Length: 563
Image (cartoon, rainbow, N blue to C red; front, side):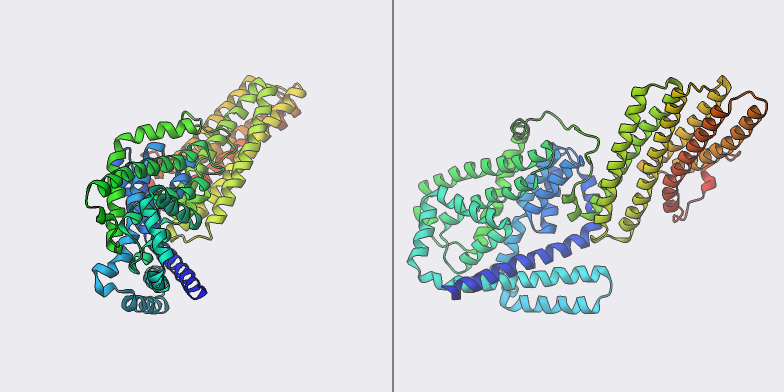
């Protein structure tokens, strides 16, 4: 028995390992396009289905695609309508693995015994000779393809002795006679190894050895589709309620499809030639049935997708997407790191969200200079804690992202975002400084003259405008807003010097108390530093656009050098 089990387990390990290597190579090669693929996704269900099928074909795992969708929904990058479309497509895309393996039957030149060693050898040569990252990715795809086939061949050879086993034959006949037993077997194996492709590989290896009756194979295939939902459900643990809906929708979709087509299969096997289900199935026939089942289920379930979404939302006790806590990351999820280009896009969205939180807190801090409201001051200080926490979380995410396969552009973006987060955190600190000055003024009964308050209002308006334009430049990647930030930052610097000089004059003329003067100068300094950090944020956009041939900063200014 060990002579059979050990080679089979080894073959399965090689199959899974080869599939993972090939998938990683494919994903790295297409990683730069993943973000664009996601951006194409709209409310159009057909587009979402095509996207799901394409991504799954690239990464060779419907479970991985669904886990990725969980991450997107949890990060607010995808809604449930889009998610269910991608899930439908993922079920179709996963059939690619079956056709790839069964090609050994309908394309003899792809026989594992001849093609696999050649593929591994070719991949190793490319890996050793090629210096570029793209060459390494291509080598990984070819090597993974070869190892996958070697594993498949090893599994098939290991189970061939079972052809003579009456116990094994009886077990498969029982699965064919009892649909529930076949479905449970397929679901159980897939859930345990958490890969429908690997589970399918086992079934195909048994089929290639002539061990699987058609009737049993049909119900095992349906069970495999249910078992693959376990990965998504486990992945959604600890995620938002909306993300949990993804796992629920996947399960509802596959269970409904399995029940529907099990009934159809039972009717076909009963009414048609009974011997139809008793014949031994081939790998190609398994691939055809799997594809027909998933495409058929998708066609039937498209009109019912809205109902599935509503049931999933009800099961998870939600009405709509809401952010429960500002400290919780909205656009980031570690599941997205499997697709670095998309993770970088999510990190940028989270940085923009953080910049808006800091902007609101800065405006609230400036308002306390006039009303000195203790409750408002306390709120600003509390939100400063939120800003610090989010800054730390996003920074940790970006640092962890750096160890993944990033292209040059994404690597530059990550570095830029880390610097931007540092600037946002400093802006939050200055907002807290302003409230502390307001608090001191309130406790010491210190007041500013109308002239001084007017000057502070003028300074704060220009500072806020510079920061607003920096945020827009970051969000829209628009150089015009970045240039305007630069212009406003220069105005703030100039105004700060003018107001400081004017204030010294008032002190000299005894028109202002020393205590009020110290606080006035400190406030000017804090506002000026905020504009400096706004300029740092905008500078990243300016640096990116300076690489463009048609970039000239002067193009964005009028005749007087203004925006």
